[in-house]
Length: 261
Image (cartoon, one colour):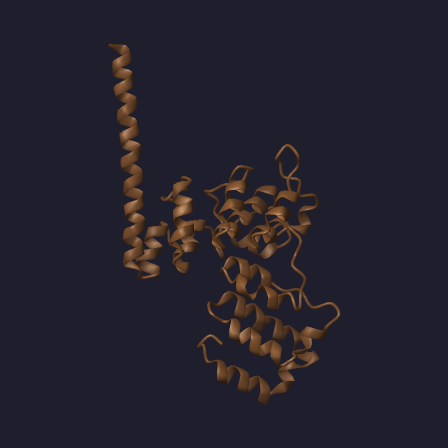
């Protein structure tokens, strides 16, 4: 699957059908989670499900991070296949990642304040592993709001992202898929210029540095993704922002001088 070799993947499963049996349901879940975290693996998931793995028929399928992976890695084209096994989790981040504005609004009171109810029903409040990785500490409403924002942006649901920004989500959250960074860092790997521009237009701090490498999103583009074009694009966006700030400061100073003269 990692090599993109679909014939070998499907052929191995057909030859060794024991991997599709009840005894190997958790292995099947791991395969499914892998398709949701790798780009262009819809055909692999389809091939697996066509072979009728036992997980398809379990009355209560085992827990899975498949939806988390699908929204984190912008693999929402897999959702219909995933829902053959699991129901869509009913929480704010999943609604935001899925572009379901009506469900998103449901999690806010009439005054616009978050009304999440039991936090244990919302990701990542119900996932100690990711909170630990992101240095998130105890579950909080802010974590839920920020994850919903990230999933909305990652999957290009910008109207929902604007709504969340207006209702408490932090554009400068340290959300990332594994360790503290920023949504802008994560978007580097997806080459999603529209989503990056959305964040830049709304004032994301482009100088945020990630936890492990102490690098900005531009640094990730240049050194990790080896994408010089993107690094230049991000650098130019930062320069335009700095120039605009300088012009605003100059206008403010000129106005002060005029008022004092």
